[in-house]
Length: 254
Image 1 (tube, rainbow, N blue to C red):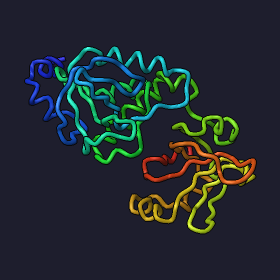
Image 2 (tube, rainbow, N blue to C red):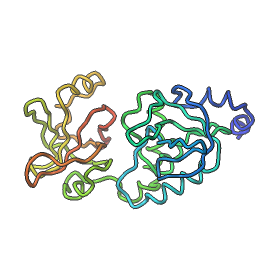
Image 3 (spheres, helix red, strand yellow):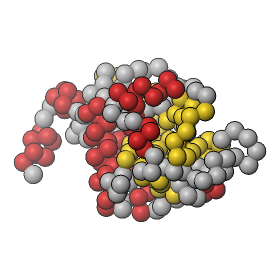
């Protein structure tokens, strides 16, 4: 409780310095409106997209937007990112904190089960913070974690229904095979129709440098996150392409 009192009375400049996910300072702003469950508009006209998190296939999208509104609407926020260039939709991606308390908005959304930790956070401490918040929400079955957010790798049609969406899939890797420059983690006996994780040759050294041997995943249960695509060919099953080590988690049940 004492820590909360000290935090509330600290000057805004010290809060910004101590804030997690401490990328380059991109200034401050006043939140004028919530656009959707992961973006908002400042009163100077800038549209901000929350970096470091992803929304998932679930029935809680409205809940996530309401939670974001309760956190930041009509409040002052600070922005941090390693790049302030707008994305193709004209939005600025940033880590966002409340200016008066230093509360990291992304961490709150993930801890409340309204978002997933993205696998592409470059700052290791920031990535650990979001991963811990997600584990907290998962154990408590909050938000999307109580709404069947995890897809079963043995149900490829269910996964394929979310094509183009960020998804979390769990299952047992039945085989690991290489075809040309691509390694496949197959979760079904039918390689064409079953769910698969694909890894390009250039990504393998990245995984190995992080201590993840792809071949060792055979016959192990894993959790993988990413964007669902259809494998090439007629009547093809779903796949997730892996670009980051953080997309793959080896489950403790192995």
